[in-house]
Length: 208
Image (cartoon, rainbow, N blue to C red; front, side, top):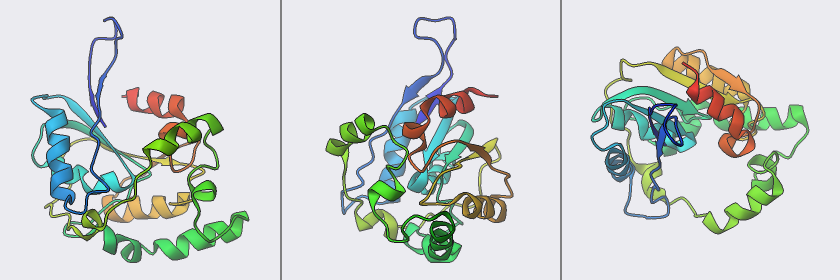
């Protein structure tokens, strides 16, 4: 998601939101295509805030190398290293062991299912509305290398959902500290944070 500041006093005031629908189910579309689409959404803006959730963190540094981005916010993010692929990220970060340990400690299943890991804190009506928008993620993006040089020299914030079961809190904290030397912020909510806690996420994004 791209936020472009707007005057709060204007009708419907506040930041303008530009969303990119990424072709996650397209086997021919990797990170370079994702980057192209986000750059298209940013357009000629010189003051954009880029918000990237989960796998979107692999697209974010590629966009920041080519666009004028004022601030980057990573949400429940797969934070990459230069040259890493999303497919390699899981083992490189030790995700499986961390996810299993958190599930065992907190008493939910170690076996993945969407209800347990993604929908456990989503209002039923919101989850039902989202069923028609579900798409399988193709392998193309996971096989693409994130070929960026370094994280941009702009403000970068990392936001974690305290109840994220897919990327547990302490796992995310460790990855953010090790890979970005950033101390993450935490709000209530699970992996689908903007659906679980929309007000909390909105307040955080508007905080300067």
